[in-house]
Every structure is written in structure tokens, then in C-alpha cells.
Length: 607
Image 1: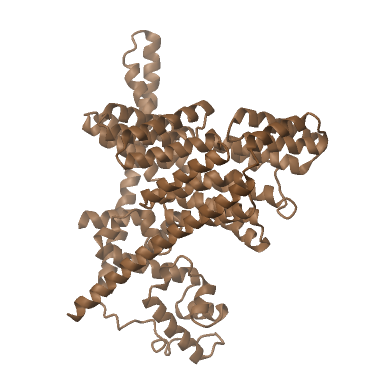
Image 2 (image 1 turned 180 degrees about the horizontal axis):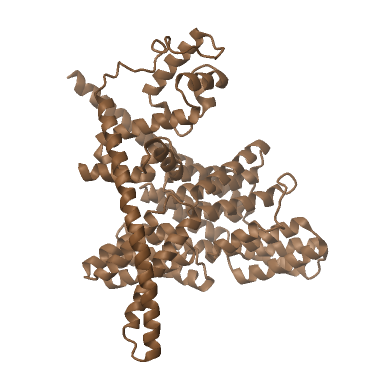
């Protein structure tokens, strides 16, 4: 009876906590919407169309830096409405600023140039502009331009799958913003981090950063970015399972549009995409199609290559839901091509997996093999950098296309065509020979990994049989060890070790923020003492110590919990404190000698 009561209380508290957090989140969003309404009522008379007309008239009578600033403002107002007009104004501003040696104007124009390339999916060209010799910005003298460039850089890293660089760039910008207390930089830093967490599908953190960024935007009384933020709130609410809140957010968005102005096709296209996605998940297929058609029309008309892969992905899902398999397959293929054009590797990977299943159902084994080749190539390169990923993908594409060329060459009839055929066959034979060598090397590598895996399992089984009371890392067991060179008093050291052991039992190390400074505060000591104790008593530095605890904890959990080990690898990584999948892979491989994906695969095969 007592046990049943305890279970009831635990369940009640958990449900109460969940409901309270949901209500608190909704209340927070509602409060932001109230603040936005107040801001809109204060700026309602500042019509953007009238502002454009006023600036256009002023431009013809302005000179020097004043004219450059007006041209840059016009570019800013047009960049979400008409990219070509925005480009024209920006180029005029850049030319004038360079002639005047107006540095701030040059920076702003260079940023606009890079941003407009970004929204059309030209990530590499955009990054070239950002890293150009003329773009060496002093953040003290030009803080806003510096923040815009760094945010765009983080966004490009995120879109290209270079998540470690995206996170590093966003966090550095956030540190600078907090140190300088610059609200504009704060809004940009949170925007970069929100984008990063959105791509990692950590929607809770993405929403947190979105709201923090919105807070500073409202304080700056800048309505220009309000529409984007409301769209992000709606999208993240939907991803967190609150469709009702998402639709309310879009109702609020439409209300703002009536009271202010149309935000432009760039923002409108993604809003229509997200609304189509929500209606698709609700089974309202016709409404989903209507919004999606509008989005794709805008995307194609303005060459928003950045948006196209995801729009086609939603369209393909809509075809599947309405039992139109043929068009679904064709649209998934279009989405792959569009993603390849902008190096969006995650979209290619997910679409290849879906296409494997669809082609198998329609009896196309050749296409199953083609998409499996593509899927495996990207999956196996996820822990490498973008350049290596692109090389693997392009090589896989080349082999597929060369196989197609071989088939075409067999149909040639004249001598010249036969000569070309022999050349192609020679190339394919060379590839085959190289492939055999690679396959042999891969088999050896796989066998080596299996040996490492088996040793890991044996060690883990032995460790699990040991009584938890016989923990070798205690102050008592260390008294007979070699004398420490530390000057820390033994009593202080023993106290630190006892407290540390208690925290280890409480799994402090799975918190992603468990840095040395934070841990020393919990232990009521200073970082220097704690670092010495860990170095001497644990035999490693702080980072290695944390990685050791995390990986040991993870190994046991993976062996014992089948449901947990079948979750996404990014979820597993974050659940033990790693924000970055590359960092997690590196830590696991350094500790065990194999990648976690291989370890989990072997566990599942032996289950």
C-alpha cells in the first residue's frame, strides 16, 4: 500500500511539473505577443511602403555618405520583397561607399551582398564574401556590422552541417554581447543559436533562444524582424507537439500583417511552408496543398534555393499521404537534387532513406541500390567535416553516373562509339580494382572494431559483477599510494573526494554545463584545488575525467536499456551531456577505440 502511494505521488508530481512547465511556456509566449502588440500600436503609423517612397524621393537629392545610407536602407527594406531591386540598391551603395572610403557603408553593403547570396542558397559564395580581405571588422568600432557578419557565418555553418563551428561562432558572439551588454549583438547571438538548435531538432532550446532574441528586438523597437520571430515561435511550438499554440501564433502573424505591412516573399514563403506542414500533420490535405503551392510559387519566382529542398520534401510527404506514390517519388528526387545544389547533406540523407523504401515497394532494385549507396556514403561521413562529406557524396554520385554511362555505351554501334565504350570500361575497371582494395581494407577495419567491441563488453560485464561498495577510488584506498606532491591538506582533499563521489553517484556529469568552475562551487572549494585533486587522485585532467564518467555511464545504459540505445545518436549524446555530436563521437572513440554507432549496431545484432 505504501509503495502504491509513493508511485501515485511520483506520477502526480511528474504530471504536475509537466503541465506547469507547459502552462509557464504558453504564458511566456502570450506575454511576448502582448509586448509585440504594444510595440505595433506605437509604430503603426510607420508604414514601410511610405518609408520606401520617402527614401526613394530623398535619394535623388542626397549626396555623399547620406546618399549611401539611404541606398542601404532601401536595400534593407527590399531584401525580403524583391531581391533584384535590393541587389541594385546595394551595389550602388557599395560603389559610392568605396569611392568615398566610407568604411561603415562598405561593411554594411558587403553584409547585404553576402546575405542575399545566402537566402538564394549560395552558401560558399556568401562565405567567400564574409571572409574577404575587405571584411576585417573591429567589433568595438563597428559592433552591429561585426554581429551581422558573425551571425550569418554561424547560419552558413549550420546549413552546411558544420555544427561544431556554428555553435562555437554563436557562443563567442554571445560572450561578446554579454560582456559589452550590446542589445543588438545579443539579439543576433540568440538568433544564431536558435537556428543551430533548430537544425539539431532540439526545439526546446531553439525556442528559448528565439524568445531571448525577441526580447532584445522588442526593446530596440525594431518591427523588421518581428514576423520572422513569430513564425519561428509557431514552427517550434508545432515541433514540440503543441499544434494549437502554433496555429494561434499564425493567427497572430496574420493579424500583424494586416496592422503593419506584408513582410515580403522571403518570409511569407517559409510561413506558408510551415503552415502547410502543420495542416499536413493534422490531415487537412487540401489546406496544406493550398499553402504549399503559394510557398513554392514564391520560392521559384525569387530563386530562394535555400527554401526549395524543404518545400519539396513537404510536397512529397503530401503526395504520400494522398496515396500518390509516383509523384511522391519524383518529388523526393527533386528534393535531393535541390539539396545537392546547396550542399544540404541532412536532406539528401533522409530523402535517400525514404526513396530506398519507396523504390523497394514499386519493384525498382536498381534504384534501391543507388539510394542505399548515397545514404551509406553520407551516414558514414557524418563525423567528418563538410569538405570530406562533399567529397564522399560527389564520389558516390560520380560512380552512379558512370554506371549509367556504361549502360548507355553498350548501345553504341560505330567504331568511334566503341572506342569511347572501351575507355569507359577501363575507367570502371579501375574503379572496381580500387573498390576491391577499399573493401579489403574496410573488412580488416571492421574486424578490428569487432575485437575492440568484444573486449569492451567483456570488461563491462566484469565491472557490473563487482560489488558497488568496492570502489577503488576512495580517500581510504589512496592513503597507501605514492605521496602526492600537492600541497593540499589531506583533510581538505578527503572532504573534496567524498563530496565528489556523492556528485558522481548523482550523475552530475550528464549536465552539459558541468564545467570546472561550476563543479568547484558545488563542492565549496576553488577550481585550483579541485583541478589538483582530479589530476592526482583520478589520474587525468578535468575534461578526460568528465569524458570517462560519461562514457562509463553510457556503456552500462546502452547494454541494459534497449529502447535507449535505439534512439537517435544526437539524443543519446545530449542525454549524457554532449551538445555536439562530433565531440561525442571523438570522446567515445578515444575512450573505446570505436565509434558509438558501431558499438550500438553490434549490441543490437547480438541482442
